[in-house]
Image (cartoon, rainbow, N blue to C red; front, side, top):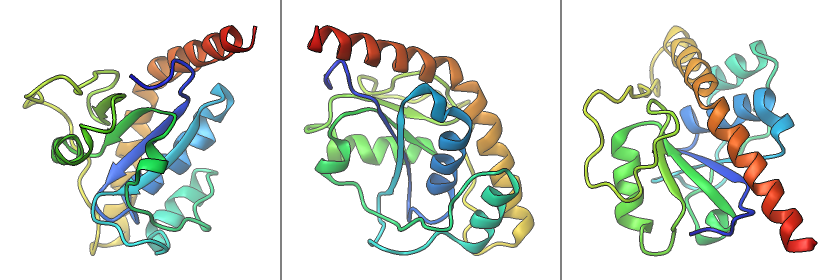
Length: 176
């Protein structure tokens, strides 16, 4: 298990230029007061690419910042102090689990399945809502994707609030 004081949430997609950075930016904007740290990465992401223009535009329209985003792959360093890794699809969660399951022992989820830890499961429910990849599509597809992510993040609020509380309590216990 990660340290009880783990307070990072990592959103995961393929290239870390559309969906996961948008989830990160919206989570920071909407849930930053929880004290959690939000990051994003891609399973096939090269380092240093900016977020897609339409993702940046959507974030800006929602009052979130994404212009300085630089893509990054999943690394052991990123996973340190991470309590949740949340994929945009079931496939992202499954691939992450197969590649990183031996070194990462925190919760693994899918954005469309709020609060459900799939880390110890061999099967993800078939009715899990998946976030479609807008890559290469028009602005409307990106904005529809953004609306879906925004809606699904709201359904994670209770999980993130509980994580924040547990992390604070554990950190106080470690220092006190």
